[in-house]
Length: 148
Length: 148
DNA sequence: CTACATGCAAATCCTTTGCATCCAC
DNA sequence: GTGGATGCAAAGGATTTGCATGTAG
Image 1: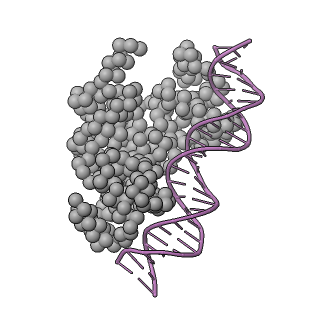
Image 2: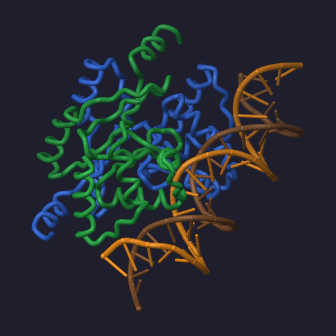
Image 3: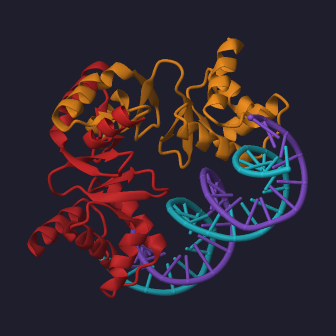
């Protein structure tokens, strides 16, 4: 797999971007992680854990850059801070319970029909990369219906 | 129209909520405004403009309360702060072009099938009150396809 | 060598909170 | 009268910025 990363880095370099050690480390970390999304703080800590101390301002700048070049998506999950997710693997989205905070992952295909309609009716190419849909999970919906 | 507001306030009162002057003013302002969404600061300023100086902490608390009772929706449009929109009229959502910034309004019925699927497959009651979908509008999509 | 990226620290901005006072019910 | 709401000021937390220094190309 490191080969894939090298190829990616080479492509970025050829697009005119500078590949610094910090950018390389963030990319390697995000692309290898099993976590689906990371806060800036989480990225900083994960790198620190492997011995790379990178200033949080730099992490923010690298994340901004990765978002600009389209390698990650930035999402507000209502946690008071943004989270970032690597767009390499298969896309997924999140259902977030307003009551208990549970997060349910759903497949990207869920948005296929929506994308089709938007394209057909509005000529709009939706870039739904990482959606967060708020609502009530089954348990909380039942509780709310009966209890209060 | 003031009658509708009075009825609404009366219902809230009967639900056990206290109707303070501040809450009344925020409700009147939001429900009467032609703007589709307001930041907390915008609300505070609009009220100040009509002579009502309300502390911003109070405005935040009133907005939080209005969200809890389901009268407004809170949305992050990627502007670095949240915006709030009155849910009185017919619901609508926005398609936002990443390239030219154009905003296209779309009907709420667009999400009917998505809501149905989420409820059926996940038991999840989606509260899609005010969605912002980013992407490329027709003009920009064509330009991008040919140009770059 | 030169432009761009980083580190550091300080600043900014939005939002929340503690607490005394006030007021809706 | 009393519990919840407000105002004020201050704290909190995420993100950004200015500037000197480091480094990729």
